[in-house]
Length: 433
Image (cartoon, rainbow, N blue to C red; front, side, top):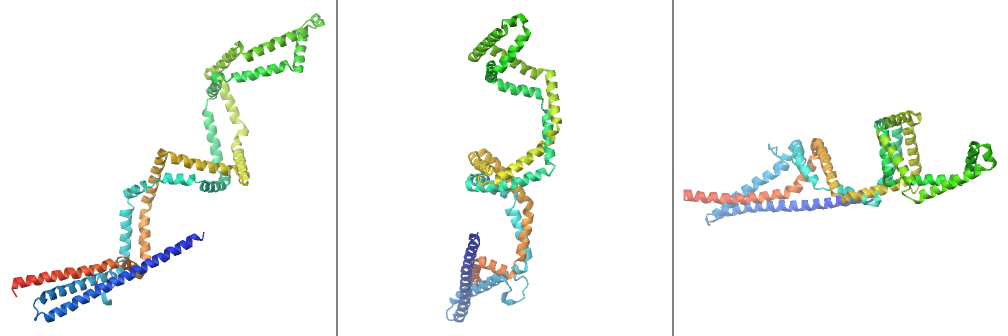
């Protein structure tokens, strides 16, 4: 946290150093320009004084005179930008201070029209791979862990807000509406078809065989079967213990049949079970009677009061689990969220198509935002310029462009001197004097 203020202080010191260097360069250039102007005046006076003795000095005097005039004119023009020359109240001087508001408005409009136009903004935004930046950010385990902690802190509050809002009833109603649209019988037939693919239902038949095999070894079950047999046999047969003999035969035959069915994957009983299952699935898919029964069962289930509170109970249970889990140092929710964010970052970095779609979305969203706010930016810039201290504003402008403006004075002296010399030569040629 302490790095930011120190960095700002360092940057401020660097700017102050740069401003001092600019100020020294500006003053040096001003002094040289003023010195050049004084030299022009001195040369003019000297050449004019001696031109009677040395006629050629008339050309030097003409050059120096025009150069001095040009230098003075450009000095006036440069000074008039920032202040009144010699403090005199001359009209159309101190241009920048006098037109601060107009400059502020024009600067704001200039930035709005030229820098914040829709086309240039979109082109500049397209140069940035926002999605890759997001991917790199998420791929960092530390950042993803921090994001997961932030999201995890918000999760209980979001779930609690959902409990007290109409979202619970809305979700419950929407789920019920969608369930009501589902035709249960065909849906169940499709599920059973998927289950019975590759004869996977034979595993269920194997379990049934093991259950029947267990019954044949259950003494209580055998005793019950023997009692049933005894009740059906004549009394004379019971005297010869026919019930025990029949039971033994039945158990042996059944056990042998079960063993054969278990050992033979293509046993007749298994094929019969296949036909039973296929027939049942077909009836579920086509039978109106089955369809009506399934729809009635669905309606009865949806009408049960337990389902009405299911959404509430689910949200309460979910919030309780999340709150308890987040109290743990090794939170399952935070760990899974962090892993998910890292995985999203890796997948996003590896999928250029998704990144292209995301970047296009960023461009549209950000350009629309800039388009809607650019007039506000223009107004903000204009207001900020208006609030600037006029002395500070003038100093800032002069400090940054004043040195270049001083060269106008050099150019003025040079161009003026050449123009004066050309006019003097023309005068001599025309009037022959």
